[in-house]
Length: 88
Image 1 (tube, rainbow, N blue to C red):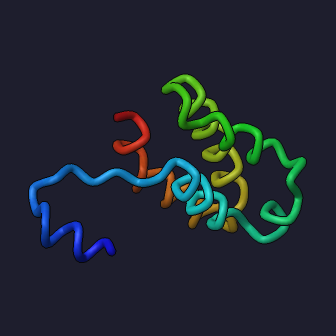
Image 2 (cartoon, rainbow, N blue to C red):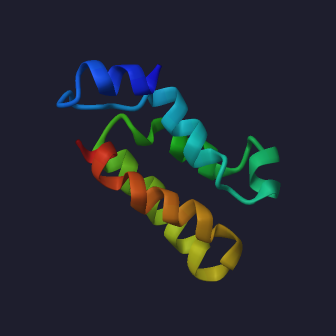
C-alpha cells in the first residue's frame, strides 16, 4: 500500500499514524521496560505526541536513562530519528 501511495502521489507529504509511532518508539525500550507498563517512560511516551512540552519531558527522562545505561541507546536513537516529525 505504501508503495502504491508513493507511486500515485510522489510529492505528497507522508505522516505516520500516531499509534504506530508510539509503538515504534516503545519497541526500542529495553525488554524489562517494555514488559513493565507501570514504568514512567510509558506514561511520558503516551502523552509525548500531544505537545512539545510533553515530548521534551519524555526526551529528558529518556536521555537521563540513556546516560546511565547503554541499554537505552536504541530508544534514544529512535527518539532522535522522530524528533522533527513529532515537533511538526
